[in-house]
Image (cartoon, rainbow, N blue to C red; front, top):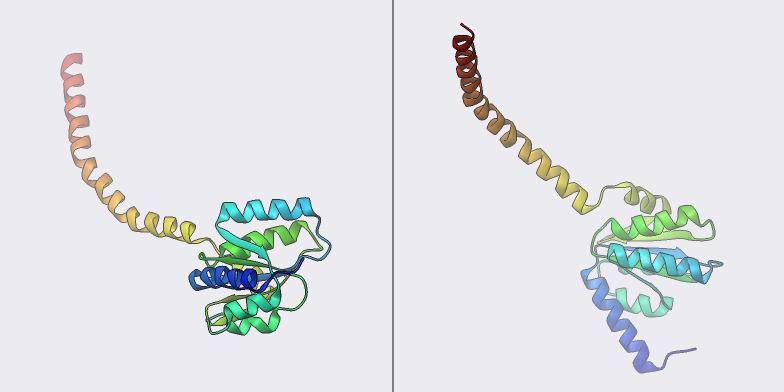
Length: 174
């Protein structure tokens, strides 16, 4: 079923809006994947905040033209599913984990703003921790000295209270 001109313009506008907010785009070939598996992939992508869609390559080329992802247009060949995310790692993680369980699903390329990645680059990107994980690690690292300082300050009155309790117990025993 082909789209009329107005529908094509709407699709290009929708994809352009997603690309404008994107930090990563991943392309994968889905030839031979069953509908049930694609439905699972879409559900996982939705849960991770990844915009996942099967689109005509010419429409996506128009959407990325003039953006930081314009160099990715050279890799848009064949039946592709496009994963677009605001988190630089989310799209790579979702599509890479799906590719591990489905050998017919092949990651072709990806892009970060201004940099095109090959399939190995996308796999390397997928191994990085997500933004939330990195923020949690950073917060833990920043909290550690403060927490240790508070524990150290708390030791002085605790030792004093233990000393008083020991003196009290000694006097009661005598």
